[in-house]
Image (cartoon, rainbow, N blue to C red):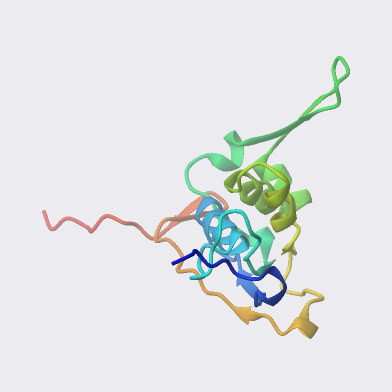
Length: 164
């Protein structure tokens, strides 16, 4: 029996909206990359674009664990001497929070032209408003982690209190 592949023209592409408020950045990026590639569908094929469109809102309210706000850096280099620009995650979340989510999702995707095409289906917005209401996006919920670090405060704990 021959292997059947999905027809590229008949693939059903849905629009999904994800609220990034109090979501851990890496876990959110892994889930978004999986949806963009189409690995959540039974028709997933590694060499075809079977993924959905993803709209991420509230990117400015994403959470991280540990000391990543101060220690994680985003750097770029112009190619000239002294042309290295370095920013911390706290600076990026303050000035352009959609960049942090976009770079995290890009790091979860494979390299190549197919992944670049799939990454173009990602739309990230810093606040709750987005211009994609005409596409009628369905809400995709991701369970938040128990350890959420926001503004240096730890809310919740995985450990149970001891009764000693």
